[in-house]
Length: 249
Image (cartoon, rainbow, N blue to C red; front, side, top):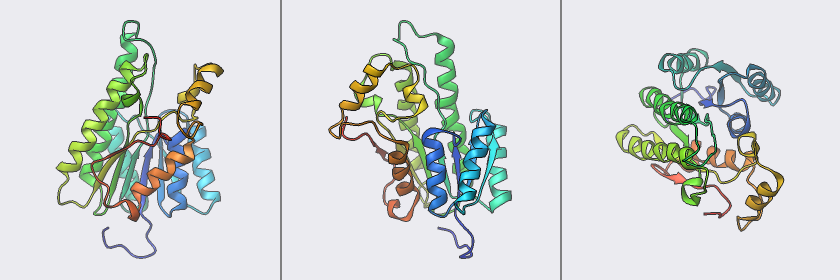
């Protein structure tokens, strides 16, 4: 960690920070003492709620809209973090999209949208992070446990997350000598809007029963893993994919 005054907090950027796992991660990092930039794509009202919740708990946060696949917008996101809080120490790239359909039926526009957000977005965010993070920093990407589960209907989404894992492991090696860790979290079925949307109760119940712990994950479960990787206890974990899924795979 770079030398900073004791009154200066670590600074975290959380993409997709207005909802779900991203929002819970932003609030958890704020409780751990980070100043947080909550990135969002379109839902300003939810991003403002996340900032307000952090402020009410005594933390520091601002919201900033940026398309994670646009280089100039992501650069502006990092500029804001540096100008507002003095630098960037942690990047949690939680933004992502998912469309489910068998490979034979998936609309190619949906494939392109997932590719743009999940693959190009990870590349663009990680590129800025690799250039700008201070010594002692942490980059945390998001994969998915569907890679191991190989569930029908997830072909395109799982393919994008396979690319995220490849980028994560290679970037960790490319940052040799920087004292910056790069890891990915791969949640299993987690009770977020992204997961629950379009699934009937029977499907949700069946998936909740699959892990040995016999429940869906929660955003709080995943945020705890993020906080571990972002904090001092996780410094020796690098170039890894942590499958936070209750033992489902």
